[in-house]
Length: 574
Image 1 (cartoon, rainbow, N blue to C red):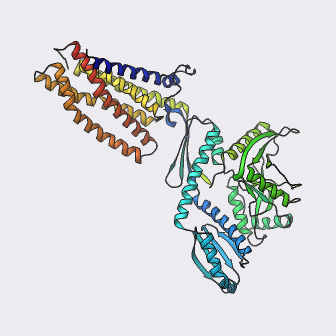
Image 2: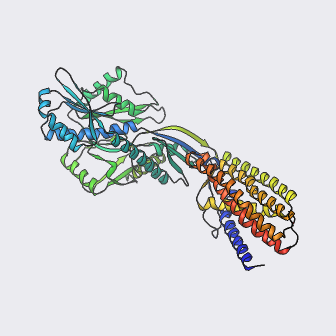
């Protein structure tokens, strides 16, 4: 036996030992509830949602509303500029549902005198905006602006990316191991959460907008007058429907009261829900539309307990910039109320008694008979605030829950299919190719080990279609051996020595084997590129299986044939 042969054989032995060492933790976890011994590798084969059980969600991002929010910011900036430059205007507002900024001028003459000045400010200071419509009436003029197309597309892309990262941060905070989070299309996020046992709580944490705002309360407008206007609006048909979206009700109220409440103000509510009946009680507030401070400058949010009643609340601390703004707001508005608004709903509206320095605030969750429930709500709120607010509203478009028992059954059935498929192939190869078939079977076993090692090394997720890909690979793995064996048979029939027949057989079969496997691999890459979900899982295992099959057939099987011809140089049964 040559030293070259021994070197190759030793290399294979080392690879197999490493492979077995790598895969033991994965098989240990499948077969035993006990923890994996510490002397084994910590890396395990990741199981997909269909095998492990868990939650599958499809989220839709409301890009239209996100763009409207962006235009609201531009509207406030334009108001400040027009006031500073003494440009007379009637209103600057975002047209509901159109993503357009509408500037209304009462005096046409005043507008005509300042038209050039207005356009210059917009074109120079707001280059992302463009004119797209002007319409005049008997005594007024309406100018409409919108985001330029390139800027709108960029903003939408950034919104999707930010939403993806925010959702990822929340899931990481939630403590889900091995989640799968990815985008699909222009406004979809696909989430797979293996092992999640409480889908509703996971959905609440993922879906919370957690938009934190501090707004001054407009106390000059009487509460009685506000309640009267809201009552009239509800009598005209604007009502909150039990089970509906509260944010839609607030939007409808503000649309109905436009022109009846002071300009630059909005109606908001503090909402209380009866734990038994589910009845919603609403307490109205009239707030300044401009946001004094947002959660973007939030540094930390954590749960603390009230010393007197032992009730949980969320303590907030701001970064230096936020702390300065918070100190300025409280210093300039002593005696007024500052509302803490979370997701458009007023949490509380305390009176500012003095300037608050240090940048600290708190959100109280009220009181409840079940203090444990309040504590969980406080923890979830602190979690979502720490993880950041979503830049746009999201909607749960699809939800699927896979039970762990179903996943376990899928594993058992998949492994059973793999076992019986392997047995049939092994028996056939031995019966038809004798010692050659035995070598092919040994290479097949090594092939399965190497597939598992590569899936673990690349941190790929094994799914049920992935198991199907492995089963298919087992059948395809011996295909290369069949081509090699038939070539060796032809050379033996020409009375070549066994060692020469093996060498020529492998060399002449190489091109055909490479071509056939390469075309299949190209198909696998196409599936991987354009497929989604289960199709990708199948494509990954198919590609890895082809690579391992080529290695097993062309390298491992050849080494064993070299061993066989060394032991029996004059006779080879195949």
